Image (cartoon, rainbow, N blue to C red; front, side, top):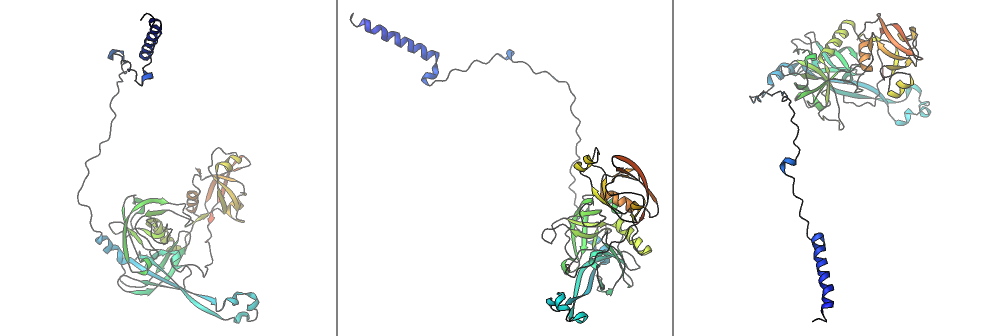
Length: 406
């Protein structure tokens, strides 16, 4: 036993050291150390109390779930008889053989080259707005037509004469000679609001008079590139080819606008249609009937919009105004000494924020009146007065290859 004691002491000392290490580092045996005790509640800092009144909120009234309008038949009965179908046709000369369009072969026949006639037809709609027989429709519906026929809802048909057209707003005025004509009432389109119910009446695809319903989705739509002067009412009432020139009415059956165009990738309605407001149509109707044309003010300039880079190059702090890119020889701007490269900043004291809006403002100035403008040339601001002239009517030749439908 005594001989074994020298060997037991190192073993006992090793066991004691191992026990001490395991107690000090419990992870060596796979055990987790006990979490530290949480501080007493009084050791946790208290949040500072903020004295502030409760926010004032606007309480909505209880939702009214009364019975809504279930039929617009009365409005349709009032307006639909005044919406007509418009059929226009024109005769075009075409060579009887493709080779006849070649000057080499044509020289053998001269002016006696064989040709044949082709009848092109167009379909649209119109609205009777006067007991005198005046009908509003779109310019593109009757453009270039040799003959225009109007069919009423009651079955009567007659030929129509063109009183006048306004290509820049895409409106045209026809006249028919019939007795006891149904006439639509015109609403104040300035009162049309987003969310109002709207009904579109026309002859889509030639299937016959059709009524569709939607709401007014926007007013004052412009910058669409459809017309020179744009102030459209946007609606999601279905508008398709053949509806052009038809009526957009309110739930009382009054005319709110003349349906004109759609935004579509397929050619059919995709819920975005545009109508010319009734107030604009009324003004153009009166000018065409009383004067034979629409009279607009004109400065004789070709304008280009400013962007931040161009504005900086002209030393302007903000991209307001337009660059005069061209001046029509003999026009008001040319007579006043304006030059290409001038920057037009103000018209009649109003800064140019929207070039299209400014264009419309100039158009409303009576020709012959003086109009003060502010321009910048070479970093120098100048005040110039122009004598407004009458805007010339644009003319565009009609291609025989244009689509036959409006």
